[in-house]
Length: 173
Image (cartoon, rainbow, N blue to C red; front, side):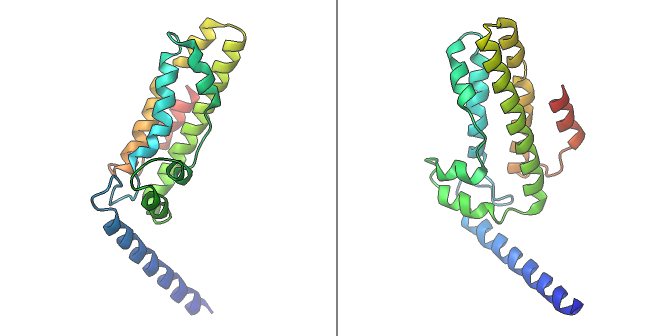
């Protein structure tokens, strides 16, 4: 029985490598990284809101847009986008090597969490017309940008193993 399980594991691993190599060749010439099978276009989901948060002090009406923001999975982002290779991006995601997928998903989870915290703080401060609270929430922009930068590093294959302590420090700041 153990030998049968080992054969299945080896077969599954071989199929995974074949799938990865297949998708790696398919994404050549697209805006999807051939090594990671990820695309930086996903980060626009965060960059647009970070830009609005950064402009809150001059344009308080942006708070409504920030409050309406919600996390969106990588694949849902591309399904809903006008990205030229969106179908390929969605399909390739299932074949992202674990060495990139795990840190990417961990960083995105932290980014989603922090973004929601900032949106909540902004909404609460705006309801109270608390300008200091609004300004304080906007101070999270550098931390949000740092997490986007770390996600971009993973997407571009620059580094798959970001230091969890750095990410935790950002979230606990």
